Amino acid sequence: MVGAIPARYAPLQEKNIHETDLLFAMARGYQRDGDDITAMEMTKWFDTNYHYIVPEFTANQSFHFFSRKVVDQFLEAKRDNYAVKPVILGPVSFLLLGKEKSAGFHRLSLIGKLLPVYMDVLAQLTKAGADMVQIDEPCLSLDLDETALQIFSDTYAQLHAAFPRLHIFLASYFECYGKNLPVVLSLPVQTLHLDLVRCPSQLDDILATPVADTSLQLSPGIVDGRNIWKNKALSLKQMISGS
Image 1 (tube, one colour):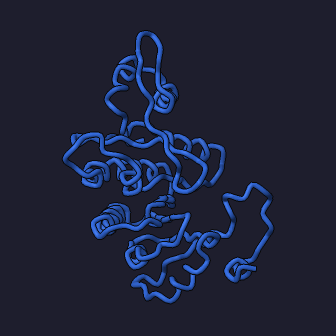
Image 2 (tube, rainbow, N blue to C red):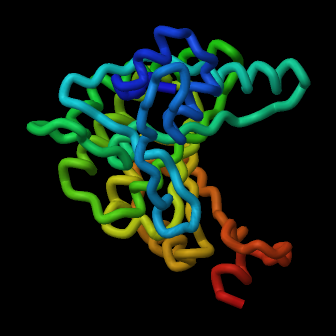
C-alpha cells in the first residue's frame, strides 16, 4: 500500500507485471525470464502460528501510495450496498514490525516520510465515503520505550488534526496495553478496542483510569480468535469473570 518495495524488485516493476504477481514475487521470490530475485523474510505474527512478510527499510527509504486495494475494495462494497469499515495496519506498528537493511538509522525515524502516505490513503477513503476507519496498532501490546510512545502520540495527533471528523477505531490485540495505557488513553481516537480474551483485567484498569475525553468508546473483544471450534455465546460479564 505504501510502496515499500525493496529495490531488487525494480526489474519486475519495469516490466509492469501485475500487482498480484509482484506481491507473490516479494513473498516467494522470482525465478523467471533470466531474473533470480530472493523473497522477503517471513516471520511469526507475534505469538500466533500465522506469519507475515517483514518490511525492509533503508536510510533513504521513500514511500508513496502504490496499491489502492483498500480503497478499491471499499468502493466495490459500496457499489454492492454493503456498509463496511476499512481496516489498515497503523503506521507506527508497520515500522516497528520491519527491519533496517542499512546501517546508521532507526526505522521509526521514517515516520515523517510514511505519515503523509497514510494521510493520502485516509483522504481517498473519506472521499469515497468512509466515515470510520479501523487502524490496527498491535505493537501497543509490546514493551515500548519513551521514544516509540512519543511517536505514537505525535502520529495520532497529526492524523486527528488532518481528519477531525473521521471516526478512528484504534485496535490492539494479543495482550494488555500494560504500561502503554496512559498514552493510549490520551490518543485522540473515538473508539478503543480491547482484547478481553487474553487480558480480561484491562477493562477494570481502563475504567479506573481518568481520561480527558469522556466520549471515548470501548470495543470489547470477547471472541477467541485462536479457537478453531465454534464459539459459545458468552456475555461480557461472563467473559470478564472468567466463567
